[in-house]
Amino acid sequence: MKTRILALCAALALTPFAALAHSFSAGDIAIGHPFIPTPAKGAKSAGGYLSLENNGTTADRLIAVETDAAAKAELHTVETDAAGVTKMIHLEGLDIPAGETVTLERGGYHIMLMGLTQPLEEGARIPATLIFEKAGKVAVEFSVDAPKAAEDHSGH
Image (cartoon, rainbow, N blue to C red; front, side, top):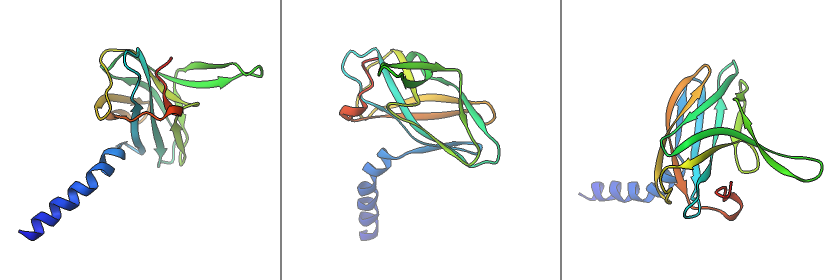
């Protein structure tokens, strides 16, 4: 009985950490912690972030993202020109070189969810499919995480 109680306590103690870090894989691509910072109430868009680690010997390319949580999901990057004007740029795909990690994060590469079809509330899991040229389709879940002021991407 004590063993069961200790095992249960250990499992419960690890639960918050499991919720914060989750991963998926597609062939040689390791997908680390897909997440969306909780957007403001009434937001029509949100940013999605994750890491893509290519453990293979050939490059791959993320070419699309699908989810029912938004009317459209696109790959974007952010660029700032010499005058200091920052703008988002739609990407047709994102290269993932062999042996390298590409991180989608605020201020750089990201997944833009436009036309949200439901409120994205903290703690929710949002199903999506990442589509790679070589690794194919992989089902993932984006966790909706507490927003950090610097990561609130809902104003786009």
